[in-house]
Image (tube, rainbow, N blue to C red; front, side):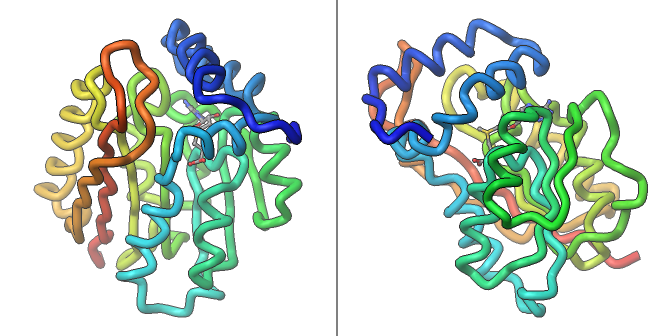
Length: 229
Ligand SMILES: C[S@@+](CC[C@H](N)C(=O)[O-])C[C@H]1O[C@@H](n2cnc3c(N)ncnc32)[C@H](O)[C@@H]1O
């Protein structure tokens, strides 16, 4: 990681350069180039999604945290595991499409296993079905990144009674995606796959970088519990 903290204007320019690429593969290639500066740049954006998600899980999880198996989907450099560790969790498995982001997650020493995979194109490993006490996807369910359909795989990977925590952004260019995501979450609830524990709307999610918005954009943390069969 570079010792010099980037300015907000520079971080904004980096992110806007990525928005020109719209396919998931282009997004993951972008993360390969951004990986080394990712942690410090998202701190400049006041990106709080990992700590917000970790705190929502922590306030509901009543089992043995040190022994709980946690699947961190689109784990990036490991910011979510870092936050969950503060709450006593310690058994992390991560998956991400970007090898450069995964390399930093590996260096963090937080994960017992890490896997490279393009979500939405390759299914989660079948041996992960019904395996995890907590499954999270933070900062990656949004337009051009991880498609909505992947939430069914997250649910499959959770143990019956386990938690699935997801986040998405509420800014203008993500509203269509957010609507589709919420329809799918509801549909899965109607199918008896899980129940909604809570939905937390956060006004000051992270600093806005688009030309149409300023100040902070909003975001949402969704927490679901997989139903016992
Ligand atoms: C904003 S980062 C979030 C990383 C981490 N969860 C966090 O909150 O810091 C998004 C991550 O999703 C990954 N990603 C985006 N689209 C993906 C896809 N289709 N398949 C696999 N990984 C993807 C990127 O490589 C990146 O590491």
